[in-house]
Every structure is written in structure tokens, then in C-alpha cells.
Length: 92
Image (cartoon, rainbow, N blue to C red; front, side):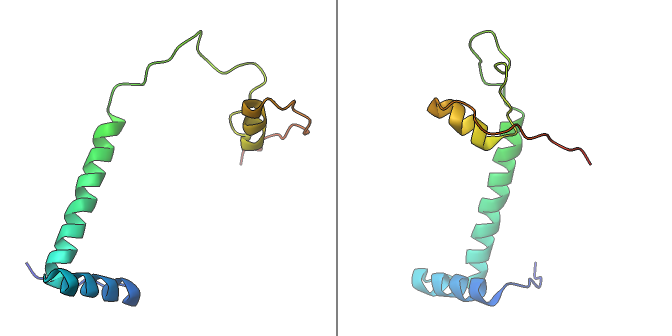
């Protein structure tokens, strides 16, 4: 099947150079890349349907831990006392 695909100039030049380097056609490089992307997407869909990871302990988040505050989580993991003012999330 023939089709037209619009590619950024840099990507086109890279793909064409790769094809020349490997002695392949540009079409075969594009086809291979598309197959790899589709396989990756399929694996991602399969992974999301996988069994949940096991957990240990009593479960849940420790008291005072705000999973939306990366800096506070990093401090907690580093053993630093929380000295920052607590931020509040505003819903929109």
C-alpha cells in the first residue's frame, strides 16, 4: 500500500541516512520503526492489564505524607525534617 507521510526534515534525513548505511530502502526503515512502535504500544496495553504488584506491611500512605509534593517526599526519603510550609492543592 502506498501512502503519504509528512516528516520533519531532520527525521527524514536521519531515516534516509540510516537506510543508506544499512543498505535498505527508506520504506523498510519506516516500516520497521512503525512495527516497533505498534509492538511497544501493545506491550504497554498488556502491561496495564497485568496483575497488581505485591505490597508489604499494613498498606496505605504513612500519616503526613503528601504524594503530590515531590520535594517533601524527597526530604522524607533523605530523612530531612519537613521545614517547608505545606502547600495546598487547588482543584479547578
